[in-house]
Structure formats: structure tokens, C-alpha cells
Image (cartoon, rainbow, N blue to C red):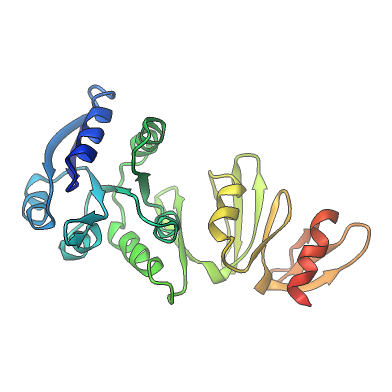
Length: 244
């Protein structure tokens, strides 16, 4: 059973989560439903949950206030939020699960499926640091990706290019290559506001790492790691606009 706490100041939202957890018998042990940050700071360390459903706006405080005041975060967090797209993108960058209010049952079930496959709390402190960093617009972005032992953090500026491999994605950086079990479309949406461009249905490149462009029937770019990445005919004109 997953020892679970709900932190939310809106009763109808807490009730919604409770009703959804009941659809997963023998999965959740609900330890408490808490509606203030102060109470959460007192009760969570005592109850030692495995999972916290955490609202962002809680009366005059936030879920971030709660996390920053804790001495130790050794539980899984699923944010529940009606927050703006910028904050949601920060959650994605930092590999935190989130549920948009009003919470959809399919979204909830998908989150729980992911939760069951990853209840490791390794390096949660570092993961939270990444989240707080990504919430600041003037900070350099970092992206958190899963690994065999937990997760690893990559500076977005160090990502050279990404290549699709069916439902997986290869991420090439200055340090080497990583493979993650997410489609390239996920990273296209995530990195689209940065200096990334999709040159081909299977390739996403960091414009800042382009060394040379070769025109021709099959044009391509040479990246800073000397990889040759093709540019599809229909994407070529848009690509060239970045350099004119």
C-alpha cells in the first residue's frame, strides 16, 4: 500500500482525489487530508508518507513554500494545479508528475501507472533544486531524465541534438548519449521555446550547436559533436531563417 497524504485547501479537490484513489483498491493508504501549509509541515514528517498530492496555491502560501521549509523530502510528489503553462513546463523539465485541475480520471490513472513503476526517492533534493531553478525565468534551464539508477540532470544548453527511435529518444550532449523512454514529440514540446528546431520527423537540433550547413538534394547540418543531421525539404526554408 502507498502511504498517501493530500494537501489541498479546496474540499472538492481533495474529495476528487479521494474518489479517484478508491478506484485503485489495495493501492493507497490515505494517511491524512491537510488544508494548510503549517499543518502539513507539522504532520508530514511525523506520518512519513510515500506520496503527497500537493496543491500549488494553498490559502496565502504555496506548495513550494511547504517544500522549501521541509528539512528532508523523501516522498514522491504529484502536483495538483490550475497553474499557468510556464510552471507546468517547469514540472516537465524537472520530471515531476502533475495533474491539472479539474483532475481527469484518465490523467490520474496514467500518473499512478508511472508512480507504481518508479517509487524510488533517490536524489529528491537535487530534483527539487532543479524545479525551483526552472521556475525562475532568468535561470539557465536544466532537464531531468530517468536513468537506470534514478535520474540524471542535463543542462539544456549542453544538449546538441535528439533523435527518435520508435517510442524512445536518444539525447546527444557534450558528455555523450542517453536514451529515454519518451517520444521525441515530448521533447519537441518541452524545448520548443529554446533554441531547438525540428529538422526532420526523427531529429531535433540545438541551433546553437550547428557548425556547418550543407545544401543539396539531401541537405544536412554538421553539429558540434560532428554528427550529420538531415534536413527535410519542407523544413529547409524555415531552418535557413534562423541564419539570415
